Length: 462
Image 1: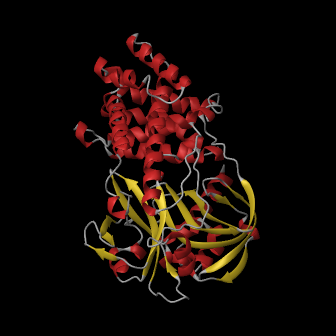
Image 2 (image 1 turned 90 degrees about the vertical axis):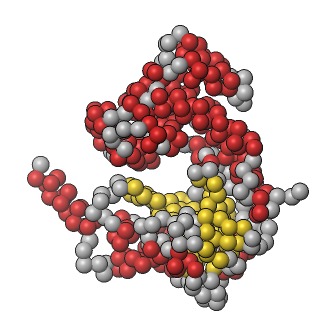
Image 3 (image 1 turned 120 degrees about the vertical axis):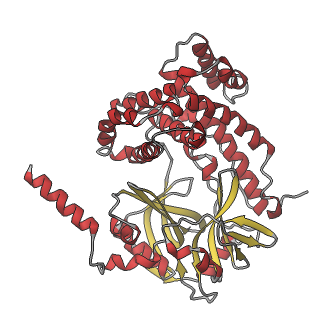
């Protein structure tokens, strides 16, 4: 029987089997290698012959010997992260193929692995300091962490800020430390989010091996049609991700543009755009359904588009609904855009995603709300800090553009924009829509400007 949307909740058996392996590794990181019993290492004995490459098999055999001889070195902890991340690549491939099959879309299985990434950065002193700290965490175990274990690492964390190419590593690290501190003191092992912390630990360990993810980009020029956005943030970091279509020559590409910034608590939701003045032409174009002319942009196989913000030119207005429907309609199995291929580091179940446009839906519920498409009901993933896409607004919208995603053992639908009208001139509402006036300097209170002035005075006084 062909898979259809009704089968979405039926997670493939192979994915669940891999998840069982990952859970065993997570349990080891929870108790710590310094407290591990022989049975905690059995997972690596099982995986020694099951991992896909001979070089990784050799590393796993060496890891098992190191455990047996109680001689764990840096490479042993690198191997733990490498094995866990490799299992998640396989999980990503399974879920992404399953989702695209259900939607009747094309997908590409990449043969890129972590073996091609372990070539840079290990000699970098500051990354070695990060690695040593991660190893200390793995020895102690998540249940043995305390606030005192974080304090000696703060100077290293502060040094990372000054290295632009390590900004993403710093952001993940900062989020991890903040979470650990938020859970202090740990009174009960059951309160620890072991899968999430193991994810963060292994991602960071992989970053110490390859801080720069090598991606072959190509130069592109054409018309950019922005369709929606999402805003991801924690207390000290925020990212804006714009989604759209790029028509370059005769090809249509699904693209995303990512901008990130560090922030502090006083910069709240209403002032988010003050951190990204360069995004004004893009947000203006998105809010008015107007295309942009892109020249000599850089496009990665995963759809990441890098552009020169100072050279953007306004294009023509376009039919937003028609554009989204032609590529992402849930009712049509056709996706006219080029399939994406993510590099190994990003092939993780959390990055499984397929864009969806629908104008035949219902929004149900008030707590964990659901979107009902046909006979299928899918929980909604709605960030609570931005009111534009709340349940009440979604219920009165005429169309929704977003993505199916996988997180916390189930599928979700995350909206990126919605329309209050089904007319040709329909303009989208999106996260941060209520605050785009801040681009015009209409806000009386500008915390970003105040903070910059204070920092400038401090520098002059030294």
